[in-house]
Length: 306
Image (cartoon, rainbow, N blue to C red; front, top):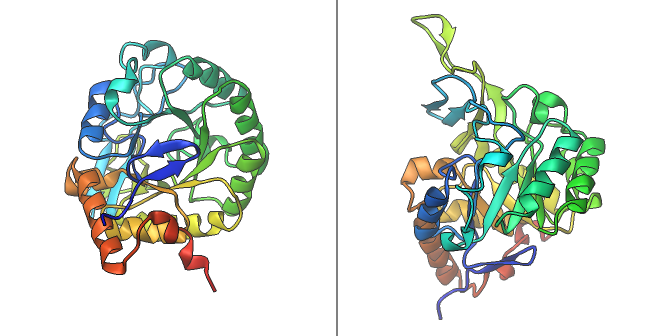
């Protein structure tokens, strides 16, 4: 019997647990469809802000031996200019999470109200960007008080499930997850990129990234993300999208053992190609077959058993 890798993510049925993370590929309906056609169980758009943003100057992405550093700077056309690109999302072939991020609770409320009228299956509320002044951790949004307040405001303005994306950089991450749950969040995305970090050109003596600093993702982030998911799972009852450094089926199973319902894949697309979703799903099934697991429900959170 073929192992069942489908999951129920806050009432959203996914054919498999893989989710395209925000900021990777998801810049258009066509790119979201491309990820879904290559096996993604769900896909997330690039983060959308109230106004258009050019983002940071190039270069915006660097790879290094531990993974990747990005300083994109939330480049996007703004919430009022995405109708053409993100309409008819049912044609994508997988549920679409619309990623939104603002500078104030009022902006998050406005974004949620407008995004609610669009064809997104759910919303991802980003409180954790580590490298863009005025947003996320650089705006002081990663506090329990603001996390709960913003989550409540978003939930009051949308009928869609809401996932709150948290930062690995803060002490008291569990308190942020609890605050999101109190605010009515339907799930948690854990985690965003770490940092910010920096790379310096030894010939010019200057930081390489156009934005000087950037968020760290990939291999170096995985143990941190795994620990974050493990701790959050013990603190809340809502599902978790475990994100950070996942590029193989073994990585995905680790996250599910820690308590994740689904697994976000971002830098893994760079590492293994756009069909990383199909590859990871095949590897998950192989691991399940070797261990006689029939479904992922059998192993979710099993690392917590005494």
